[in-house]
Image (cartoon, rainbow, N blue to C red):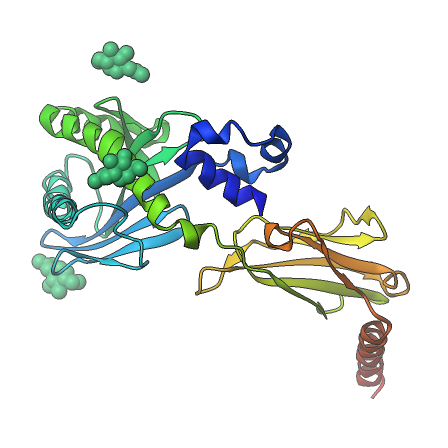
Length: 329
Ligand SMILES: *[C@@H]1O[C@H](CO)[C@@H](O)[C@H](O)[C@H]1NC(C)=O
Ligand SMILES: *[C@@H]1O[C@H](CO)[C@@H](O)[C@H](O)[C@H]1NC(C)=O
Ligand SMILES: *[C@@H]1O[C@H](CO)[C@@H](O)[C@H](O)[C@H]1NC(C)=O
């Protein structure tokens, strides 16, 4: 499993990463991906006296922390969610998040008419940092109103989003007055966050670098039309996420393969399906091919077998017959 190994390996020890053969590095698209840690606070404003907070933290697409908005306590969803931070440092982060979750909504409540906000509305704050292999980490902080970008933070200042209009300008003007707060934010996203992220990657290494082999099987979808079959290739339970699935005839990729999204299972593994609409008489000789880092360079094949095909064709014929009978009754 080169791709994800290379990725974490390089982030944890860039100097050793330089020793990896170029062929491994350049052949993995995954390797180029940055990795991020972010906390999200979502506040729902119902009326002038009623707001509700939800908080969480994520390593890319994996949730690492939950948050109890009543007690202000984080819960640790992975055994390694504490990274390498001490109890004291974690408690400080918890306190800061709690304070922020109380004071931040007040700013919006106090400017409802000035910023022309309309109840009920939703404000999301995303704060974190991103690591690119071989580059300095980058901190970020963004605020969205009703699901659209409003303002973002960079270099100790707030900047309006192009689509945020007049409201974004006003929010920036206000937030830029809190110079001391902004210096602290800068330190958090550019110092504390990357340090925590590196510690998290290190503590979770075994889990994050694990390789889980997919299961693959074929099924038929609803017939796309007379004489046509919809072949569906299911690939399930794999980790990490990058996967390549394609309908093939021999060594030839079938460009009409329709890819679904890569969807998460509750256990952190992934599911992907790829379908192909073919004429029934052309279905023989097709196969589904799966490439994944857990397979160690050995592709998985699922050929369209004769039995499978016979059943599919029979089903299509039966459906046709049923339709004919129904029309001529
Ligand atoms: C605010 O909204 C809450 C929940 O919808 C409701 O129970 C409460 O009565 C509302 N308060 C005011 C002042 O409208
Ligand atoms: C950040 O701001 C400082 C002072 O305002 C300035 O000297 C520096 O060039 C800025 N950096 C970037 C990347 O914009
Ligand atoms: C945690 O790990 C990071 C990265 O290896 C390191 O920079 C940091 O000093 C460690 N300890 C703490 C308390 O952050």
